Length: 294
Length: 311
Image 1 (spheres, chains in turn purple, green):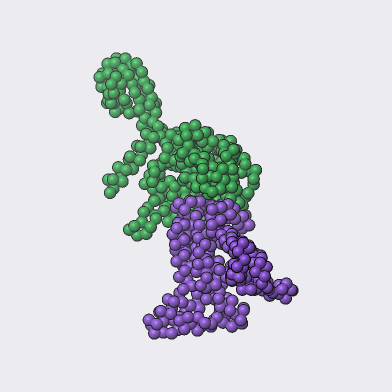
Image 2: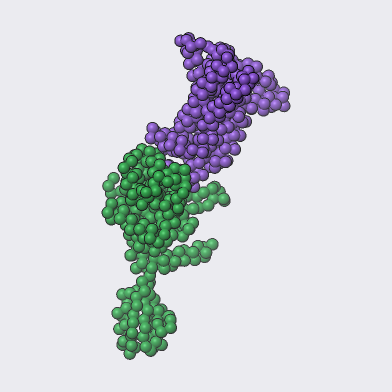
């Protein structure tokens, strides 16, 4: 498996255009954005007040919050588009380039597919990790220039809190990315083209978090106020609900359309695991039975 | 299993689609390819050659029948460990160099060795251009890289699907020598799919002819050619008397100063004797051997006729 992952890593990371635009655009984009603000503030002193508007005032939250781009609704609707495009190319590229025929006789199909999942997640997670570091450093510089405090002060307790928050957000984002990769792989298996995979994957990815609207309207249509609670089976809700439980020790509240399911932490964790295993398994079963004709 | 055939297929069939929409790409292919042979798989475009190869490589699931590689079903992951293949046109990652492409394939197979990759690139004449992106390669260069990829795992069985596509005449000659050397010097079994009849005739020990998805002939190239009638051409005077002397026993067709006689080469002494006994002067006798192309046209023509009359 290690060899398969190394092969996938090479294929993905040596496609410079692809990885440059769709993966490294996060750290590069964040670095350039902050760099622009810092430079402007240095050149134009009255711009310094606006320098820290993107900050929560705490480096711990600023850094950990970056992970939320791909896991927190509604930001994730757009935040997941670039990773999804990357995933679509990785999964569907093999069909479009006709390269499955070289790979399948050399490895088990399930292993080939799993190696793609693992490599994709590792690459995107690395990119987000680098982005959090850049965001943290740039915010420290911005706060220094603006002469504003930027806490919390470094202490064992602050670092432990930060580690908990950071790992929680990273794990939730990784779970969200695996589900996204599941959508991308299914779309690639069904369409066998990069564009088709991208369009269908985007469809899955956009529709999934906003199904609350659909369930809400369905409830109104059927005059059934419980219909909206079907949203508790959707990954995005469960990720947000797990976060709510871990942060506030309570279920997620304040949802629109009268959603009041208040799923338990165990339910959400099980539901998330079910989605992850289900999507990967479904992809594996389809792939195992598929004729490779290109 | 040392005695197992390199390839054994038993009534292999593949239909794409279902019900009335189904397209029967391969109807019935039973093959036995013994180790060490260069085996030709001959058929016109669309005959079902590539579909059969894809079934042998585990890329397509047969609708019916089974395929064994060295005695193991192709579904067994170990079966394909001993196989290297170039299936249809070569396909690589255009943004990677030739070396990186081979590196990726070797790692995928779990047998990565840099020195093996370097040796293969040298062998196929791509060593100096190995660092260039494959996207800039000509079809011929990609074909060479495809051969290198097929040989990456030092396989016992090499399956080559139209390997001379895109090669220039010198490259084609080189490829033919290379294919023979795989069998003669390295003891490999080569399964060569082609629609080029003279390629198969020059390179292969045995040949199977597939037409409209079904195997219609199989045997040693020499035997198949001998199976055909062949032709003798005779220049004699007077020509009309010669034709009269022979037409009671053979089919004779006048062709200018010559007579074309549908007969096996072994019949030539008898023909000459017959003509001399009739007082005919025999100037020349030419044995026109049937080429594989003639044989192929004959058998596929017969099959087409049978198909048409059946319809």
